[in-house]
Length: 158
Image (tube, rainbow, N blue to C red; front, side, top):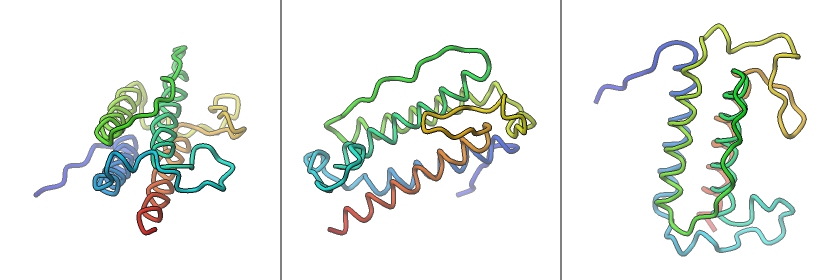
């Protein structure tokens, strides 16, 4: 089967984002729905990491947050969707597909030359205090999924 790739720097970021989501979906596909809400880390101080359900809700909510922040650079005033806690893996699979689709639509408004921004006044101010340009925020989004995929892989080993 021939792999197709999107064009340019934006295409590369979207391809890698989609690959990260695809790998995550592969990891979670065998997890039964009734395991979603099992508390896997009762000692964590991070509510986003207590169960597979909270991890996946966090991933989806964050993904929409990254894309919404990028979208709003173009003068929009969109709010990201509220965090949702699902009871089925299919709903999370659909949400992850939705994050990719929304991000792809958002990035259609950008040119490759707009990804890097040296002027801090034109960067995205994140909720955790960092300033990122579009490229940096997309790279963060990709690694965010990779880190949580690894976390879920480790949960599955228990």
